[in-house]
Length: 392
Image (tube, rainbow, N blue to C red; front, top):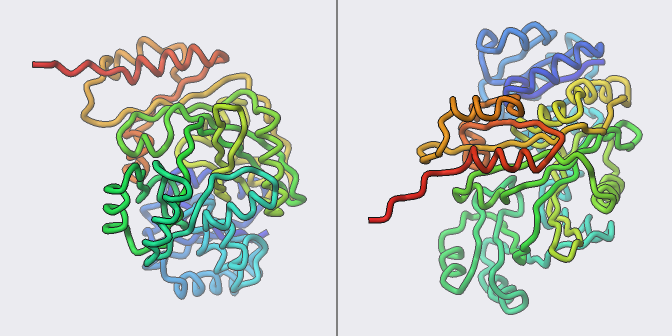
């Protein structure tokens, strides 16, 4: 099997997917814009061939790279980046070379939040009231206010995370948003005050979920981007209604041979409201956290799905695993050395976060593991505890 991997060097953990593909018997062919000698040695060892382009955004250069690989190695069976940023590029290349997987025709309900909501409704899953706002849609925004009221959220219809997202609380906020928003289609969405959580996993070639997990956010991503320290954890147990909703979404998209990350709000009355989908694994250290929670190897399971069509991996998790992220320049009560000493029994990993992800995740993350969630929440509260400001 010939697999082209786009941007196998970034994010840094991608090399592990490449290694597991090679170990599963695939010929792995890499494309990126980094000099070959700058790739980590493990990645160089696991790639059968590497093609450097000047610009990963150039579809012509990428087509030339794939054409070169076909001439040397024969037909390409799969092409993947496992990266939201390159999702549409992957689809264009698959469509152009008739490679199995998500194609251009599949992108709208995957990339557009308005398209996602249509799929959720068809699957019978509640969604927040919303309105697509075109670039000149100020009258539509004011009609939305009349229908829903304040506050509400405005975010790009195509986009990931909380970047360029606004919380509109009054007429002044609305005027400011309409005056300086980027020239993009936005989606206006009623503000929901619920617990953010996810249903995540891996689907095999038949469309069966072979691995499932759930993230629970102690702080919504939007609040973290606005400055609040982020902490979240891998839940040991997935609520039946969350699993059922996630399975409906997998079927609605006819998802096959992919990892996925579906976000929901758990409302105060216990109901679930679907928020958005990402057709890739969650970012940051989450895959490592899955592995630590269940003593599994998700990287290997994904590669086995690609090469063999399915994988054997347990979704049982003996431990909760929690991320506690610190941001620079804050007067935390405990020094790093004090954290390492005090929580040595639960602290399993410390990570310096790449600047691309640090706004939400924090620049420095502590990963904690224990069968008791309360123990981890108490430790995280101490790790993130700050010295109160002095009032003069």
